[in-house]
Structures are given as structure tokens and as C-alpha cells.
Image (cartoon, rainbow, N blue to C red; front, side, top):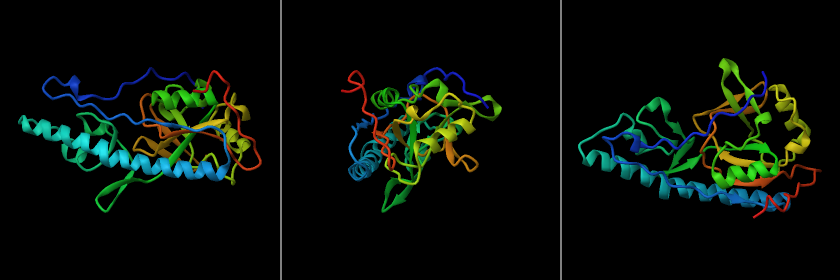
Length: 241
């Protein structure tokens, strides 16, 4: 496998393209942009961001999905995925159920709660752009790999940026095993924090997740790498707010 250029930017799937259906506008999530600190405060802040995102799913996203379904049905129309949209949160939606990107979440006391956070490591500037733009288009080309069937994939892992059971060298080895030989330790500086979805698959041989597609996604936070015995990378002044 080898690294390839990224795919063109995708747009949020919007039912307004279907002239017979009312438009659907998905609520926008705003990422938290963290600066270097220490591991425990970073862990605490990411935990709070996970709670904030769960609130977003229940108080905004699912409300918007249900309101759209109600609007569709009030017009005497129907779509294949309507019942599913009333129950589960989605990253992108389409009139075809096979194209729905479902956010991996469990139901607790009638509310959705995400199953797992994933982390996409990259240089500071690109990670911050992913957060600001709520998009994975900014993952560097040399950190994307070609999977079976010629599909372009992004690598994500379950190891958070404050983990003490891994290091930058181990992260680099994962990229090299996927064919991304240009990646070095300087590239493992920040991470974009996302949630697991139906578009992510676990790869046991590399202990990582691979994700189909780029483009828009909810980036919960952008955080510096604070693995044990490693100093965080300060973003340059032009990369900071």
C-alpha cells in the first residue's frame, strides 16, 4: 500500500437537492482548540468535551433530524431512512440508507451517548484547520494511505494524546506499516478528536481504525500530543488564534 493524494472536498449531504423534499440543515459543532498544558488537565478537558458533544447530539442534532422528518411527513412525503433518523444521530445523511454515516452511540435513559473517541494525529497547522473547518480535508496527503480496492483511507487510533502506553515512534510505525513512509515523529504533534462512526473500521494487525472518506465531520477538539516523557509541540504564531 502507498500514500495517495486526497479526494476532493465533499459537502454535507443535504436533502435540499431533492426538489420534492424540504431542505435539511444540519447543526454545526464548534471544536475546542487546546494549547499545550499537561496530561491530567488535558484528559479532564477532553472528558468535558465528550460530555459537551453528547449534549449536542441530544439537544441539537437529534432535534433537527426529528424536526426534518416531521416536516417531511406533514407534507405527505416519506423517505426510507425516516424512522432511523428519529432514533440515531448521523454525521451525514442521504435519502439512501446505504449512504448514512451513523455516529456510534448507545442509548442511556433515552439519550444518546457516543461509544468511543478516536484520534487522528498530524502536524499542528493541519490539525487546527481540521478543527476550524470541521473537515478532514486537511489531513496531509502523505499521511493518507491506499487501502484494498483502491480506496483512500485516513488512519485513526484509540490512544488519546495524553496516553502513557504509547509514544510517537509507535505512531510512526503504524503509518509506515500502512505504506506512508514519509511520516516521521515531527508529524505526530497534534490530533483531531473525532467519534467512531459507521465509516470507521478497526484493523487488528495495525491496532488502528481506518476511515473511508474525507470532507466534513464533527471534530470535537484539537489537542497537542502529551505522551509520557515527550515534550508538547508549540504551534507557530501563524497557526495560533
